[in-house]
Structures are given as structure tokens and as C-alpha cells.
Image (cartoon, rainbow over all chains, first blue to last red):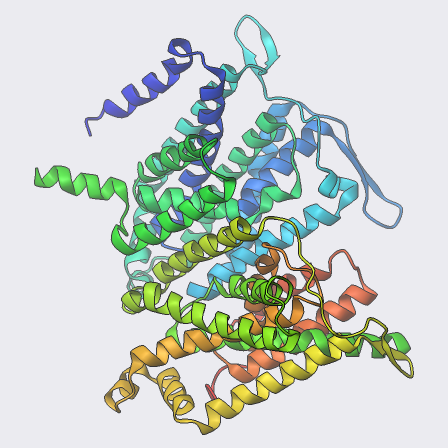
Length: 327
Length: 290
């Protein structure tokens, strides 16, 4: 790919709302974009460190709840007659809080989970997301439980000449998500092309060898987990302020699986894999809508996952790249 | 004190079915090195088959339980032959992903076939509880406990006394050496997966009439099965049995004395703690199987 091609791609995406101001299409692309950001962050763990983290939705959900709660404010008792009260804060503060809180939990989970590998690691990460879902369901004073957090304010941004304005329109939200996605992509690219990224790839290839040449394996894995969790938290925040209602189902395993499918089909451990996979699986549900029942979508996802892992395990992007090299 | 006894009885009933689930999962992991994400769906499948046989086809309740278990064995064998057989050389992460895909297909297939509304399975036991001193227990639950215990015992005897059991234990310890000694690993794998799935289906068939049957019932149970297996040490059969009862008691006592709302969360917290502090599980699999 020529070095300016990605920027042309971004420019085309950025001009899309001006050329085709169709709100339905923009809504589909915006929610696809949010999941693509999630997939980009998951790829850092799944693709570059080779750790199958299946609790990724935990960070997404944490980001969503943190951001929503900061922007709505809360008042909770923490026992011994003490209360924590927060007045509603501006949304951008919620966005930053989402990244920080998700990143902190990424550190915690990394410290706990990277003591083990393989099946054990996978199961810890899944359980982590489940525990958070239970907390979201049952800590009703904070999260409203199954009644959901409602009336979450839309994202607001400072725009030149207009001051701070809430983003109500589809196109504005689309641009916001596109902007964050580009940022996330750049952060991940800088990280994997840095010393840290080379250390991650080394330990993916051969962990004991990497350890023997002095790479602090756990240290680098935790860094990857923190960055990955922070980006997922940002995606969660965007989701909360875009959908504007959050319930504990945001922690469902099925959303992790959606992100995993995006990464696997696109090509794990490639920068463009999650984008390609995310575009495919972000748009498929809407192509199916009206033709098939919702279960059909998940059956299709399951079949796609099986077929890709069995027959095209490296994903679409590497397969296309090797086709191009051969031609 | 009376309440503690009641919890003990409830925990034992719950623990018996948990042990069935855990043993199936740990057997499959031990012999095949497969983390079986379809386990919870097989549990739901067992429950739905019982519902189908009893309510739709009018089969006798006890026969329906047996038939549902056999259907689970068949589905397990099918999954092994179609998906896992060609992946025997693949790495553990790829196999996990394929099994996640399979569980998506199964769960949503069930949703498609049966709809989202929970079903009730009629059973021949009457609803009034047996009262023994301070403890009361429903006859249906006692039946569930008895059948779980019988299945656990039967499974141990199969593993300990039969040629198939010996082949499984040999494969568990060292697949290559077992293959050299003339064990047909392919068929051992199929049998293992079929039996493990059958145990999950049996647990579903037994608990379906106790609770309700719904397409998402496998979700939480699949994760709990992991909890049980991790508690006991992945690949340890005595561990899975102990882990099953341990989870039953933890849920029952923590749910009773600490918080009903967080009842299901205690199991997961327990796994995270066990893995963080003692990654080999409470019963390390040093003596392996049997």
C-alpha cells in the first residue's frame, strides 16, 4: 500500500456524509466504527501479544459506564455513613475518565492474568467480564441495574466559532467516531513499531527465548493490556454517548466475540485487519436485517468464525497481501 | 443451624449436577486438550430434548431423560467428527475459537428452533416437599441428586473397569505412547467428546424440569463449568467432582448468608482468586486420571 493510500481512505470516509447524507447509512457506519475501535484495541492483545483475551468487553463496558456516570453524576453510599457524590461533569471529562478507569482495570487484570497462559488466561479474562456484569446488574444505587442508565447526554465538543456544542446529528457523531478511530489506529501503530512492539512480537514468537535475552515479558504484556483497555474504554464512552442508554448487557460475552471475529477474519497481528474485519461484520447485520431473523446473524458469525479459523487462519489482509505479492 | 443444614442439602443437590458438568469438561480437556465452549450449549440441548420428548412427543419422563442424554452423546460425537478431528494438530487457541463459533451456532440454532420463551418440563413428582426434621427438600431434587450420583458412579466404573476406560486413561497420560501401544486415538477422542457431551446433556435434562428451559440457560452454566474445573485443577477428575460440590456449597452458603443478588458472581470471583493465587487449582492433577 502506498504511504498516502490510508489518508485517501480516511478522506473518502470523512467526505462520505457530505456526498451521501443518508442518516441510516451514517448510523450503521457509526456503530460499526465504534466496534472497529474496540477491534483495533483487541488486536493489540490478540494479534501482537498472541494472548487470547476473551474479556475485552469488560473494558468497553467499564468505559461506557464510567463515562455515562461522570456525565450524569451520582450519589452513592459506601458504608459507615459515608457518601460519594459527583455533580454532572462535562462529557469530555467522562471520556477521559473512561480511558483512565478502563486502563487501570487493564493494569489490574494484566497483573492478575498474565501469571498464567493459554486456557487459564482465557478463562480468567472471561470471568472478569462476568463479574463486572454481575456488579452492573446488582449495584443498583450506582448503575440502576437492569433499569439501565438513561438520558445520557450526547458527546459535546468545542468547535471553533460555536463554543462547546452537543453533537446531536448523525454526521457529527460519525466524524467524532472516525476521528477517534484514526487516533486509535495511530496509537496502536506507533506502539507496535516501537521498542515495545518489537518486544511483544518477540515474546509472541517464542516466550522463553524472549525471556532468556532479557525481555521483561510480564512488564510488556501489562503495557499492552493497559493501552488496549484504555482504547476499548474510549470506544465504550463513544458508545454510551451515542446510544445514550446503557444497561448491564453491554458486558455480554457476545460483544467480545463480535470483536474477536472482526480481528480474526480481518487478520490478527496486522494493522488493517481489524478495520477490514470490522467493516465486514459491522455492515453484515444491516444487510441481513429484513431478510432473516436476528438469530441468523449469530449463526452466520459462528459459521464464519469456524470457517476462517479452519481454512484462512491468518485472515483476509495477509491473504490479500500474499496474493498481491504472487501476482 | 437449621438454616445451615438446609443450605447443606441444597448445596449437595446443586453440587451433584455441577460435578456432572465439571467431569465432562475436564475429561474433554484432559484427553483432547480442548477447551470446550460448547459444553453449556450441550447442557441446554439436553434440557430441550427432554422438553421435546415429554411435552411434544408424550414420551415417559424417565425414558425422555435417557433419550435426551443419548441425543447429547450423538451431538457430541458429531461435533468431534466434523470439527475437532481435522484440528487435532492445531494450537489450543485456534481450537478454542472454533468451539466458540460452534457454541454461537448451537445457541442461536436453539433460539431459532424453540423461540425465546422459557419452557416448563412437566414431571411426575408431586410438588409438596419431604420434611425431615429441620430440612425440607422437593422429591424432584432428591431424584436429581440420586441420578447424578448414579451417573458419577457409573462413569468412574467405566473409566476404571472397561477397556475403553483404560484407553482413555492412557491417552490422558500420554497420547503418543498410547498410540504406539495400539490405542486408536481418533476413536478415543470421539468417545471422550461424546461421553463428556452426554454428561452435560444429562445435567441439562435433570435440571431442566427443576428450573426452566430457555435458549440462554447454557451461557452461565458453561462458565460455571469452567469455574468448577478450574477450582479442581484443569484435567483433574477428582478435582472436578470436588469442585462441583464446592461451587454448589459456595453459591448456596454465600447466596444464603452474604448476598442473594451476587450469588452467581461468587463462583467467578472464586476462579479469579484461585487462578491468581494457586493457578494449578485446589487439587493439582498430579495423579492424573482415575
